[in-house]
Amino acid sequence: MSRQVRCGLALVALAALGATLVVAVGGLEPFGHYPGPYGDVLAKVVPGERHEGQLVAATVLDYRGFDTLGEELILFTAACGCVALLRLRRRERGSDLPAHERPLPSFAARAVGGALVGPVLVLAAYVVIHGHLTPGGGFSGGVIGAGALVLAYAAGQRVRLRRVGSIAMLETAEAIGAGGFAALALGGLLAVGATMQNFLPLGTSGMLLSAGTIPVGNLAIGIEVAGAVALIVAEFLEQALLEERPEADHSSQDAGLDAPRR
Amino acid sequence: MTALQATCLIAVAAIGTLVVLTRDPLRQAAVAGIFGLALSALFLSVQAPDVALSQIAIGAIVVPVLVLLAMAKIREHDQ
Amino acid sequence: MSVLAYLVAVWLLLAGIYGVVTSRHLVHLVTCLSVAQASTYVLLLAIGYRSGAQAPIFGDIPQSTPVVDPVVQALTLTDVVVSATVSALLLAIAVQAHKRFGSVDPDELNALRG
Image (cartoon, rainbow over all chains, first blue to last red; front, side, top):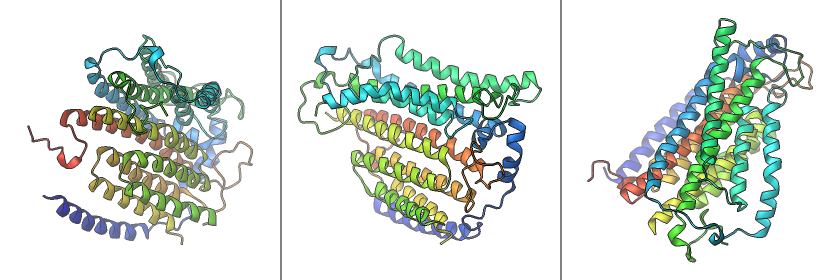
């Protein structure tokens, strides 16, 4: 069917969907009157049972840890898919530009970006490790850690992606994270008899080493998310960097990430 | 509902519409970054700091960078 | 006024799907999909919100203060990261499609063609 017919049909269908959803949404509880029992049950029960106050971390890693295992594996699979899709194209490429011919970004970008990579990594480590005490945790901290790699590229540091060890290191980190979390789930099974059961000593609430497997789970997820996101960005980056080779004297290209030339 | 939450909701709806209506992918990446920022403000106003942290990191680091890199490769291939 | 949050979620979903259907560029399509995904975040968090309550972290507030629902926040937290990764996968497919067929217009990507 032609494009016009398809768009018209889509509008009609979307209008019908919208009407149905508005009617459905009108039957929900008014905004601000949360009725359900689970939030209240968790608020009462978690500080006593798990010796910690971060309810979201406890839900993600302990009470609903099985969902997190699935989500983590989705992450892992998507990263593997990206690697598989983007690696096929690399067999046709040659070597990229020698180091001294690559154009550099401006001095300000290099200075500020380069100076910030270290603090960003420390911030990421802080967010991951304190995930059971403050807002944050494995997912947020992992993405911030992957951001350090992006910052290093944007600052013009020549991220040696093709040297043996770089991509392999990211893949290893991702595998360790995913495997670590699965091992934690199995550890519950072996130690206590129920998968994902919190089996490490609980400690005192508010200390760094408390709440059993929750900080360990945060660490595993942080490593895995950082590895997966950094791996995806590195795969995309490597493609972009490699394809710069025959167009080294391009001056008429408009702004894109392949132009650290201003 | 507080005024802050109402403002954040309307901002999210408006910027979301703008993201859809921007057809050029490069410009859309920039508008998507702003959309992520509005979303994280909304999440903070509904008392969800963990979600806001994740959204800030994702919306500023992952999504625009990946869109720009994909566009870079598509354009290189065009030439 | 109290259904504004839910209506915004519905609007984002409709806008996102409209963008996907009428898109002329695969990368534009992926970003519109992420707008549609954002509608689920808004809906989930709106359901779990309780007026006058605090964030569900008992670090420095007494344990008897009312807090918002942590379960929907847990769902949304993982969802945000995972959906970004799935968008990355879709972008990789878009790049490959451009290499194979020479165009990123969804209307021209006809699988049954040559």
